[in-house]
Image (cartoon, rainbow, N blue to C red; front, side):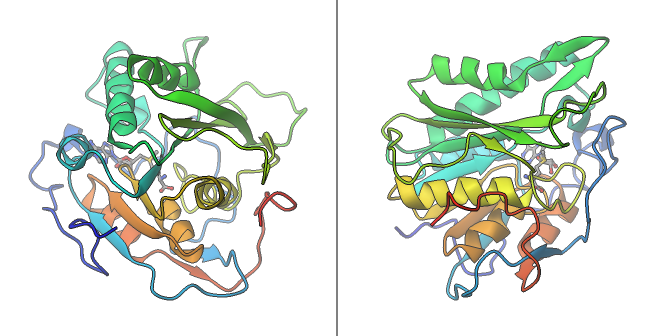
Length: 280
Ligand SMILES: C[S@@+](CC[C@H](N)C(=O)[O-])C[C@H]1O[C@@H](n2cnc3c(N)ncnc32)[C@H](O)[C@@H]1O
């Protein structure tokens, strides 16, 4: 499947950081409740496979994902793996306004996924004033507004299980939705990932979670292009390329989009791969 938005090494769209008011551009500041980055090394990730996969393509568009998704839906031949921004990444919005934004954005993401593809959300809950905000529930609300079914809901540990914790939740949700695909017994994947894997920055999706999500796309769908409309530093894109999938990212921040274009996997340890025994 050839896409106009997927060109080798080409970044299209306008870089808009400078054009927006300061509060419209997500800052690089680490939220106060962020879990510390483990083994952070900005542009270097562990190699995921013994064989490299030449010829995969990556394109990163520096623009607002919402109009981009509307414009390109349905993304034929694609699955979407993404993490929607937290309220701390949209400082102009109240918690209630952000909730509504989140559900509408998730709805757009689900609507842009073609029937042959899946949408996988990686989201970490937050707490505000002693109240838990469940992003899994927000994703589910979006899915119920469309016709997407929940295929699975996995838990990714951000801290070892069994330890007391009061700050940001010690686990993330990994949620898979589709209109046309249904889950199959083989190959099976773990419901609980013991670690999220190496993270390139505080808001990153860990490499182990990216790997599970990309491998699920490979083994359970016919789609071979991964789209991350909120791609940040491009962890999902880099893992997808490493596993032989083409990748398309959209990112509002010029700085992050540039990182996402350049993020590469290197031959190194496979710390935090986290899916051993389940991936083929
Ligand atoms: C949770 S982070 C994604 C992290 C990413 N998965 C990674 O591993 O680096 C969400 C990203 O969405 C970006 N963002 C926020 N609003 C956006 C919008 N309207 N369009 C595109 N990107 C946006 C933020 O700049 C941020 O980098």
